[in-house]
Image 1 (tube, protein in one colour):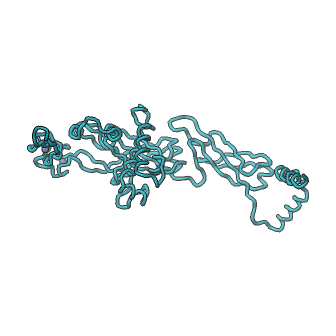
Image 2 (cartoon, rainbow, N blue to C red):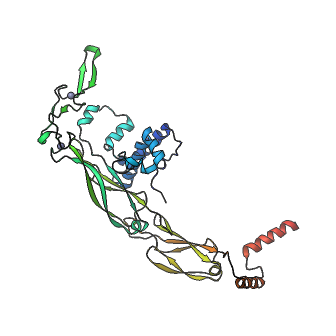
Image 3 (cartoon, protein in one colour):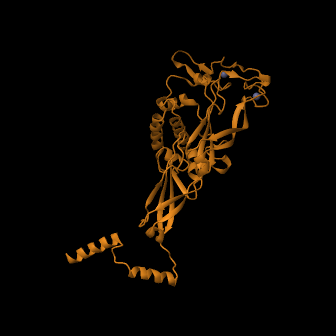
Length: 375
Ligand SMILES: [Zn+2]
Ligand SMILES: [Zn+2]
């Protein structure tokens, strides 16, 4: 079963990977899982985000060092990698900006990009659930922090909702040109930071940013059959876009706690069950635990240690499907470590009654040893 996705694991690397290794792995995986190649495939989209999140952390030496030291939980004061208040992993400015990163930006200038509608950031929250909740589904409330448009100024950043005005320094271009002829230099306007607009009188609620952080609660229904490491997307529940771009998404990454008895692979449930050596030798009806109750299962005489039994339809329900997987039971024959004198006596009597033919493997083995020395 996949643990909570380790960032190195996501990129198929180990901790000794160089910056160049990370770059290469990221480019390859981001191209492979790019949503343009898999339209309407939520799992590819989730994978794409996962790859981006891993890259965002591992490609930054500082974040990588923190991740190496503290793991997925992040430095204590940062509140974790995936969660709010962390490194805002998983948040990125839409697929366009990723493509720019991958393939070198093209002809678009920073200025053009700044004023273009931009999709809001995605917010990723990690949700820890029990094995049973993953198997059978559950309803959950998820608290998360979200930057939202400021109510006071309606996101303009100006006092009483006043709109930003054209920057007087650059005339709205965001750039300052100087020189003439062949010697023209262009630099970003420092007054407006290149946006071409300034706020005359900033809103006091948001200090002119147009945004405030709020705690929100989302209701999320875990579908039966969900699994560890899966990411579910609540569309449009992320942060608002810029320049009237669409909202980002809320990404819910599942971490499923291990079970005391069971483990699972996909829809198949696995159980190791100790049985006594007399049960194994004589056959027995076992009361096999399932996730919900128990089922009776008959094992035959002469059951061997490690034998597997398949109990149909007692596994995990298929995600978004109607079929159920099987429960696979591996029996482990337990040899008692402490026997009473009476028990020992009975076993010696049992041995006396043995002809040696009872032990097929042992007989075969002894025959081979005999051949070896008589050859
Ligand atoms: Zn405001
Ligand atoms: Zn300006």
